[in-house]
Length: 482
Image (cartoon, rainbow, N blue to C red; front, side, top):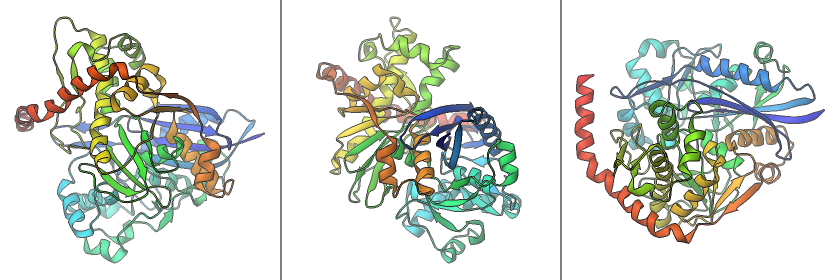
């Protein structure tokens, strides 16, 4: 019988789970989609935690069919900060308010001023404070305020917990109360990568797994991707893929990079300098499914786009389909195709979208590099990394050598790394990373494409400032009409 570690990743558009061995072999990866209920004009974006649980039951049921594999431990990562108000039984009391939701902007500003924490470091606190102020009846029914990954782990074990990465700062209980958030609703903190509890009998029966299986405290999906992509030291960067998209790099000291976040890394002694976008990863799915009606989804249009020359024949795309976070931080930003002619077809549109994901990474990376951070290599992850053409254009546009991991579902691998470390298979997370990840191939930037990409990137950078006044006016009228 083979031992494996169950990594679970609550993505923005789907839940994924996989079995990974201690030497990094993926024995199986399964996925199931879930919906986001959103209203752009109102700034809302919510998901049903019950959909996550049903999805988990479904994917684990597929994975657990192989009786020759023994699941030794489980860890969960997820999108966030996403607030899941949970009752004393570990069940949700309302839909989860996701990281895409924009209603807690005032609260985020207040908490940042009061605590000195910024961006991701505030976690779910702004959303929790918003809920306390605007939905007091729901708040009264809530026993715990949890992140997405904490919610599923709590439901599996019955143990509510706050999972903290190494060196992650967090306000004291008395300070939380002063800020208007009942301290009792923020559970006791445990270090990420430690055992929270055993899989309860009820959850085990639903999942078809062994009761008592250790469940290990997880992390946000980006941190899990850093682990699963094999990042281990300064100068290592990653394009995390996923629906939102994001870029980050490890550095040994705290720096100031405009429009970026700087936070302690999930490895002790390092910092992450990076930025999270809003919908760069989702943009191609939107084009393929919602616009082109392509039944085979993105794979078909990627193949067509790969045959289009760099620069997409002068077509440029702004990927701000859900506003944008790093580096412009504008919830009213909107997407646009610019430069359209009768000569452009669906393949040109797809090529422009693919190139825009790389322009967005470069845009995020510019202030990071200017702050003195060195990026020696960029690992890629997720579905986009299956395309060699997409990986190559990312290398060409960013100027970073691109390395492709053997297992592209890096968040799943990262959670499996935490699970294996949590039950003592490895002495440390870095040793688990070395054992459970490997690079399959490396792509160098092609200098022959530099001129066209420099020209197109200059247009990309000029478009947002030029269009912002127009798009802001449209956003205002749409909100008024709604």
